[in-house]
Amino acid sequence: MSNGPITVTLTQQRDYQFQIDFGAPVPSLLGDEPPPLGQSAGPSPMQLLCAAVGNCLSDSLLFALRKFKQNPDPLHCTVTADVGRNAENRLRVLGIQATLQLGVPSGQLEHLDRVLNSFETYCTVTQSVGQGIPIQVTVLDVDGSVLHGGQGAGMQA
Image (tube, rainbow, N blue to C red; front, side, top):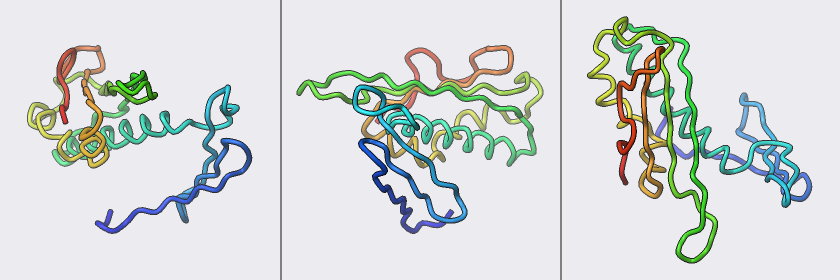
């Protein structure tokens, strides 16, 4: 990816539904708010935020492992946003938790400690979003053992 600008165009279809165009060759998608504002005909902005954080973290972890010719496939990532009211009583994303799970036992992967200590720093989206929203990142192996992060850990802005 280049260092240039990224442009996404949104066009209102009706009410809170927007066609989101990423530019060729990427297919567009429909975004929508949940009821009572929208109809949940597509992902909400908060869901898209979670997807962006999770996708970038997953890509970063996969890239770092493949750099050492390691295969963690299939990776799985779950991202949860804590939504609540701020001091001005406005709805905000107060925190994000991302849990990545390797598809293999940790013992099958070489250089795993080195990868786990650095992959987050290469995640453009998480590092950017994390400047305003606390993000906790946990990495598990296929058996559910915590390899990185966990309760109380994570990236602090």
